[in-house]
Length: 80
Image (tube, rainbow, N blue to C red; front, side):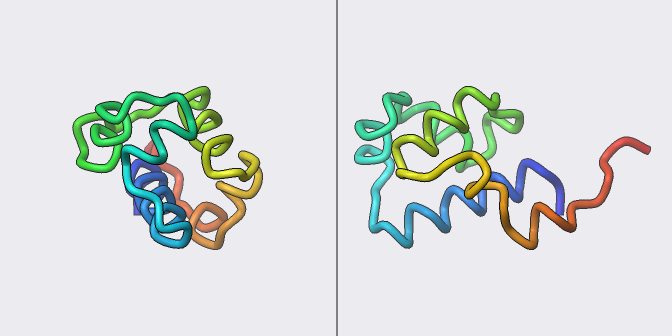
């Protein structure tokens, strides 16, 4: 799995756990709904760490909690 897919899947997982729609997450995180949609639907494949931090703030978690999963621990190196 690549990093983009891991970030997208984690974001979707967290929204599902919290029963948050894109627009509610946008309101809670001060990130435009279009930005969130672009991440989730593949138009933006390199979301910045500041955007991810703002999404984490809206989700009520830290960056460490966002990335502290087995998927991120086991990502293969993408530079060959």
